[in-house]
Length: 291
Image (cartoon, rainbow, N blue to C red):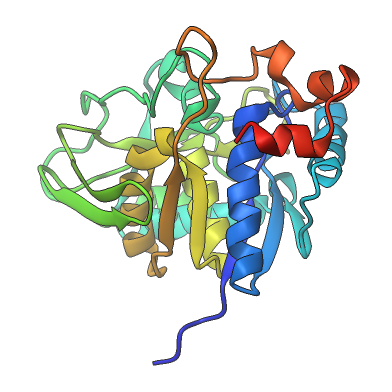
């Protein structure tokens, strides 16, 4: 079988200004794509309605171009809800997802990529206690799937049902061999959040995990370059890929950049935002020298 052409992506979320850590990860992704003579997408991960802002979306494009990073095509996740909804239908029809009525705090953790939580050093979605999980073996949830097919659209939260006590292994191109075990490292995880409003047109939103898997598959991503704090997310996403019949790309998880106190950089680090550094007179060459 021939190897598919390299396709990668830059996947910023417009929930704040890009900082040095983002810049290094996106620079590595850009360099790997260009070295492979591949295609590179810019994916605007704008699914967090409470934190995403148009001005941040504009700023991230300007900052990436200022740094010298280019891409070949763009997509915006908020334009792709029907695709995520179709994946949810498929999981429900297979009995691999179920409705969940757990707390809003749990749901908040899936509204954005886990590494966007400024307090977290790594993916930190809570280990689910299975309170809403159906008893017995996985069954075809034909009722909820049928409900989703009609005009009402989903107005509930859904979780993916993971196989119990199952190791998920992969070899990361930078971090090496990895294994995460279901029921220990993570449990049933969120794939769809119920609407925050009573507006009938509000169908809710996919979690980071589901949206990422669908987009990577439908844009034929062959290699995912992102931060090391998302290693556990990769195990979850491999389960979703298998459930949806998608191929699994290769992964390259970059080391995290840290501040002077040893904490992982996050969007709270305004002083290390590319906008701030640029305003203080630094050039793209100065930024790249910090990597």
